[in-house]
Image 1 (cartoon, rainbow, N blue to C red):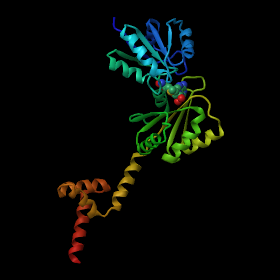
Image 2 (cartoon, helix red, strand yellow; image 1 turned 30 degrees about the horizontal axis):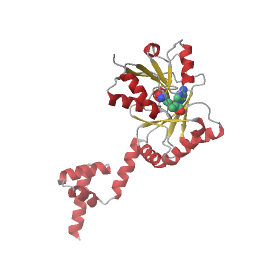
Image 3 (spheres, rainbow, N blue to C red; image 1 turned 45 degrees about the vertical axis):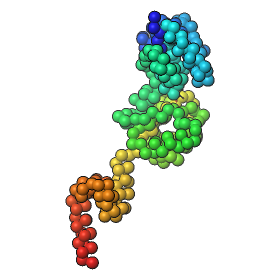
Image 4 (spheres, rainbow, N blue to C red; image 1 turned 90 degrees about the vertical axis):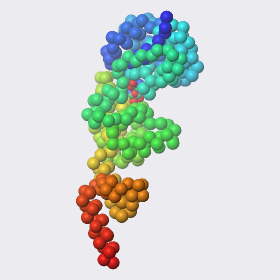
Length: 288
Ligand code: SAM
C-alpha cells in the first residue's frame, strides 16, 4: 500500500475553523506529525481524535524528515499540522514536502485557514496583486533586499510579526518606504479580540509605541502609489536632454520612429511633442 503526506490546515484561533476533510484525515491518518505536540493535543482532544502524535519542528526537521519519508514509503499515511494555519507557510513543512516529491511519495494539501489570506481579505487593501513576505529576514543582507523590493513594489505586501518585534519592524519599514505608506494592522484574527486598524506607517509606529502590542499580528502594507511612481520616473527621464534620450534608443539599433515612440512614452509626452522638439532643436542648430 502506498503511503502519503497530507498537509492539514488547522485553526488560527477559532477552533471551528477546521474543515470536515481535515478532521477525517486527522482521525484516519496513521500518524500526525505536529510542530508542537502539546498544542495539537488540545485540538485533538476538542475533536476526540486519538491518532498518535510525532514531533516535527524547525529544530528536529533535518533529522526527522528522512524518518517520516521512510515511514510513508513503507505505507504510512501521515498528516502534517503546525501550531496554526497552513503548514509550509512560514512554518515547518516545506522541507518535508520537497523530500516527499524527491522520493516519489504522494503529497496533498487540504486547504483551510492561513493568517496571510485571512488578513488580506479583512484589510480592505488592494488584493488583486500582492506579495507574501512573511517574517522579514533576520539576515541583514536578505532583509535589505526584501526592503528594496518592498519600497519599489506597487502591489500590496503581507508581513507576519511577533508582538515584541512589532515596533522595531514598523521602524524598519518606515525607514525603507517612508511614513506615509498606508498600512492595515490585523490583530488576533478569528479570536475574541480580532481587530483591523488602518494607519499610515508613521501613525502605526506612534500608536504602538504608546499602546503595547499584544496578541498576533499580520501587517498589510499598501504598495507605492502607481500614478506617483510613474510621474516620478517620467520626471527623471525629462531631466535627460532629449537628443541624448533619442540617441540611447538609436544606439540600441531602433529606427527613428520607434526611438521617438519609446522616448515619448518614457517622458510622458506625445510623439508629436517629441517630433516638434526635435525639429526645433535641429532648426536651432542650423541657424547657429
Ligand atoms: N502557517 C501559518 C499560517 O498559515 O498563517 C503562519 C505561521 S507563522 C509561524 C505565525 C505568524 O502568523 C504569527 O506570528 C502571526 O504573524 C501570524 N498569525 C497566526 N495566527 C494569527 C492570528 N490569529 N491573528 C493574527 N496573526 C496571526
